[in-house]
Amino acid sequence: MSALGLALGIGIQNIREGSALSLPLRVEGRSRKSAFYYGAMSAIVESIAAVLGAYAVMSMTQLLPYALLFAARAMIYVAVEELVPGAQEHKNTDIATSGVMAGFLIMMLLDTTLV
Picture (tube, rainbow, N blue to C red):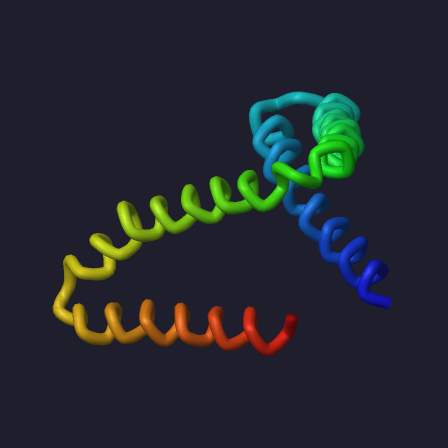
């Protein structure tokens, strides 16, 4: 059942992603066929990359924790470098800081209890 939910979530996200590519082309004056073609081609490229990514993960299980660590560090860097200073620009700095700490606490609780 969780695989079905994951597939459904990815499908819904892909509709939004294809629309984000196709709608500006349609507004630009391209035909419906052309806009659909480019939207579909973006989905095909994503599918090919998913298969290659799955193969890479399966063949490098020893490096996977380090790769995930690198990805997590990149996301944390973006959050700390861009989002936190932006939240501190206005009057509600205490609320922003408390929200970050509460979010981190919830994330850690979920991470440790769902394992």
